[in-house]
Image (cartoon, rainbow, N blue to C red; front, side):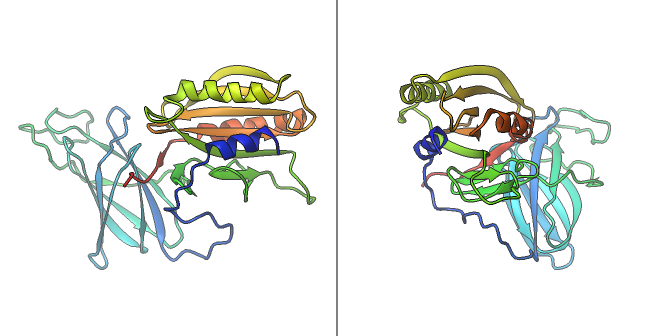
Length: 302
C-alpha cells in the first residue's frame, strides 16, 4: 500500500497490555462509564478520584483520572452515588443510573477549595481546606457516549470516522468506508504512534515531523510535501500540525497527516488515498474524526 504502510510499520511499537480489538463482541451485561473531570476554567484535572457506590448492594468501585483528566470504569447496572475528590478541590457528590450495555460519558467540574464561589451553586468556604464538600449535584443529562478505542498501547479517546468500519490493518487502528463490492479500498484512515523524548531518535514533535518529511522525500523523488493550516482540536485544546504528501505516482497518490504531540509519543492521524477524487470525498470525514480527539490513556512504564 505504499508510503502509508511504511509510516505505520516505522511508527508502531508493540505493547501487549490491553486486549486487541475484535469486530464481533457479545452483548454487554455491564456498563462502561467514562468520567471526565475539569476545573472551573475548563482545564482537565489529573489524579482525581471518582468513587462509585451502588445504592443496591453498597459495593464500591473507584477510578483515578489519568491524562487528560479521563477515567474509565466497568460497572454493573444500578443506581450509583458518585463521589469525586482531588487535592485542592471541593468534594463533589453526584448520582447516576446505569443500564446494561450503556457507555455514558460524565463531565464533572470541581470547584477550588477555599477560594469563594466561582459559581452560584457552590457553598462558600469559611476557611480554606483541601477537601470541602460541594453542594450535591444531580446529573440531569449525560453527553453523547465518548468512544474509547482499544489499542495495543492503551485507550484513545477519539470517535471512529462516521459511517466507516474498523478492520485489520497497519497502525493502532485502521478504518475503511463501507464498500458494495469486494476489493481493495480506494481510501482509508489509520492511527499510528512513535515515541519521542531525550533518549529517542526524535526528541520532540518538530523533529519527528522533520524526519517524516525527510523519509518521504528520500523515497519519492518527485513527491511534494505541503504544509497545511494547523487543525484545531477543541476537546484536547491543541493546534495540531497538518501535512499533505503527494507521491507523484499513480497509486497511493495522496496522504494527509495530522500530528498530535503527547508527552512521550506522537500520534499520527492519517488519511490515505489511491486517487485524488477519493481523497477529496473523504477529507471532511477525516477532519471531523481528527477534531474528536480528546486524549489517551496509556499504561505507566514498569
